[in-house]
Image: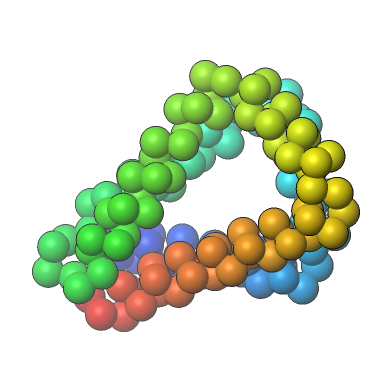
Amino acid sequence: MLMTFIFILGIYVTTIGIFELILPTRMLQLWIKISSSKLYFLYGIVLILAGFPLTQVPSSNPLSIPLFIVGLIVVFSGPFILIYPEKIRNLFFQGLDELGQTGSRFALIVDAIARIAIGILCIVAYILN
C-alpha cells in the first residue's frame, strides 16, 4: 500500500513538472493563484501528509535513503506554510518581483526539473520494490 502511494505520488509530481516545462506561464499563474488564496495554509497540511510516507520506505529498497531525505524536506517545509502563510506568500511575491519575467520562468523550469527528478525517483523506487 505504501509503495502504491509513492508510485501514484511519483506520477502526480512528474506530471506537474512536465506541465511546468510545457506551460510555464500558465503554471506560474496557477502558483500565484494558489499562493494568493486564503486557504494557502492548507498546502502545508498537504505537504506534511504527502511527505510523511516518503520517510517510511522500507530500508530494503535501494532508494530508501534519497526518498527519506526528500520526505524530510517536504514534511519540514509544511509547518512553515501552516504557521507563517503570509510570510511565505510575501517571500514568493518578492522573489517574483526581483527575478522579473525571465528569471521567474527560469526558476519555474528549475522547479519543474526537480519535480520530475523526484517523481522519477518515486516511480523507480516502486519498480525496484
